[in-house]
Length: 234
Length: 234
Image (cartoon, rainbow over all chains, first blue to last red; front, top):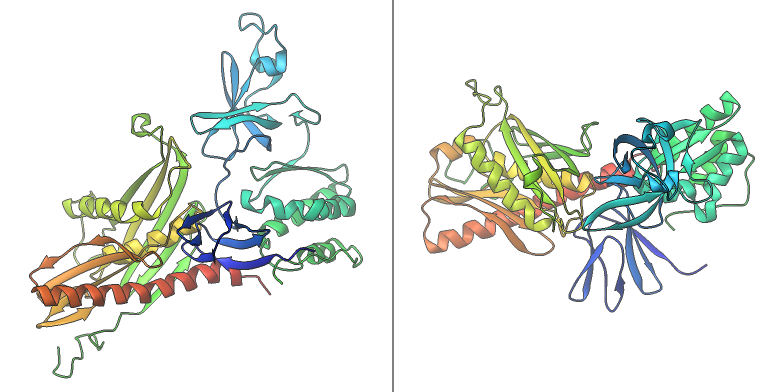
């Protein structure tokens, strides 16, 4: 594995000095690269970034998010996506190109309170995020349990190449949809598995910054110890 | 003050009061902190980034910061009217201006970050203590910051420059100077002076206060590390 240097940092801490590339959650002040949030710093192939341990979700193009319908306007739905911005889903995206506000009723398809898996189609500083459901596995979510975790811990829940989420899904036979905005839908036919999967997701949220988390989740779920060992701070 | 430089509460001239900070004490706020600065007891809660209401305050280019400093009716010996007084409005403004340089609000256009500071018990130097708590609460909320903000006062009591003026000394003393700095950047974000000092006294007073700020910074740092990197790590 490549050499990755990790360290705990708070805002204002100098993560590194020298000719390195500042990436997420850092800024450059002359030679120094300084952290802007509480998190774990990473220096990897001349790039410096900090993985935050706290904070709200900021939409990014192509992110899969889970949204809740909070309102409709004549041409679109408005979504709560656990962010400071409201997501917009144009009606044409669901009804097709021949949508007409006089003929079709938005609420027939998606009503207020419905959960939807969507992708962020476009987002920039000047406009609220535009969502789309035109893709495989996107659209209204009919069943499952919504679990809210901190958006900054989503990468941890997925794990390296999806290791964590696969572990949980395999042990509980649940299907877990993770939105990058920190909303997770867990569905499972077996109520016992559902409860266990929810517990595991919450456990990852609470202990995201601790080492050997996959092992601990495995032992909580009663999976025999495997070789897949991941550590966060060497 | 006694002849050998022991103050009315038993401290040396260059000694801070006892400070303890707890991070993440409020569940419903996005970020929070509780500080005990001597006999000061102050809670700070941060919300945001979130939608701006009233809408006309929103800025298309950047996020905005709002602060409210409030003293509880029971925070002082005689009941204080809970309506915002002239002094509270001033301190709210001062806190906002002291925190603003540390925050990176460019990433959150059309949003607001609200900081609420509630003084539960006041004992002189509450604006500095409020600032310390607010800075930690902002870091807890995951708002990108260039640096933390650490504040501490110095003053002139019985013709001597002392660090961290308490309520009694403030009433009897000749000058009071609250100072806030961004410790890693070495920049001053707040400097007020109430009283008269000579040029030399002014310099020592400022240096004393900055020294105090650096001590406060260590406490803030420890509080954040404790909250994020130590709890549940074992």
